[in-house]
Image (cartoon, rainbow, N blue to C red):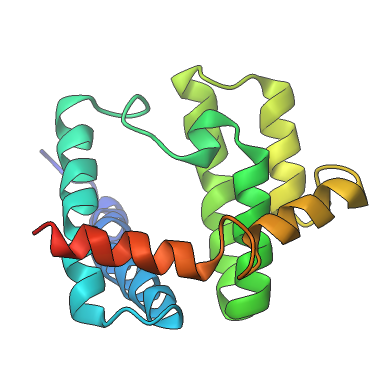
Amino acid sequence: MLLGPGDKVLYHAAAVLASNYMVTQVKLALDLWREFGVSPEEATNALLPLLQGTLNNIRTVGLPDCLTGPIARGDLDTIERHLLALKDRDPSLLAVYRELGLQTVPIALARGKINEEKAQQMRALLRGRGSGSSRHSQQVRAASSPSGNGGPGRTRRRALSMTRKR
C-alpha cells in the first residue's frame, strides 16, 4: 500500500474511527448498563461475545452484509424505543445514537434488506422528526417503561443471565 502526501492523515483518521472510537462506544455502552445496575466487568463480559461476533462477521461476511440490528431490519419501533429510553435515562447519548444511526442507514440500504421509503422514515426518526402518530409514541413509551415489557428490569435480568453463561 503506497500512501500519497495527504493520505497519511486520512489513514490515521480512519484508524481512529475504527479503533479508538470503538473503545469509546463500548465505554458508552458500559455506562448504559450501569444505569440498570450491571457492573462494568459484568457488562464487558456480556458484550464481548457480541463484539467478537461483529468483528468476525466483518471479516468473514464483509460490509454491508454483516450489518445487523434495528436499522438493518428497518425496525422503527425499536429505534423509537431506544431514542425514548435514552432521552429519559441518558440524554447526553441521544446525539451520538442519532448520528451513528444516520451513518448506518446507507449501509442498511446497500445490504438490500430495506427500501428507500423505510430509509427515509428512519432518517426522519433519527433526525427527531418522528415516525408516526402520538398514539404510536405512547405505545412505544409504555413498552419501554419500567412496568412495560421492555423495561430495565427485563433488560437487567437478560444481561445478568448472559453474564452468568460464561
